[in-house]
Image (tube, rainbow, N blue to C red):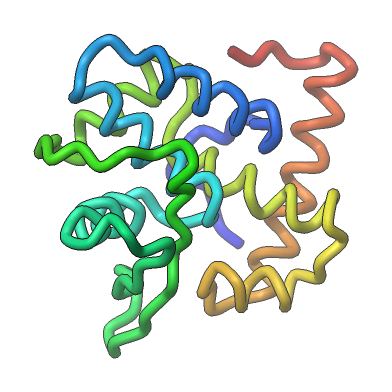
Length: 170
């Protein structure tokens, strides 16, 4: 699997879903609200931040849609993925934010990096919905189910350490 290029934070999917919905509801600025909405799209779809970012701005073109098709950023040949927009929480705000602003808000406000949201979704599918690594790979358009299995194993260890108080997390 190789070394991780980012720090892994064990994030509980359901807790983060509640947190993001609450923060969206009480966001002070339009910019923060847009950033939080993009993070919510990322979480509920297990998408990369770049895909969630593109999905939000694609959705703004027609806010009546509940789903948006975006090109997955990692593949050379065109591979598209349908992302769900949780329209019960998200409102269309035509405010352009830079993707770096979204990442900074995640770190400063939530204490996590954006990839942790993708991993929270993977862990949720594996441990709460009991999906196989192959099924998860298909859902999130990941090319390697063995890598998904490795990620789940690492996340199991991190969640156990967090629960036992072995490692300190934000």
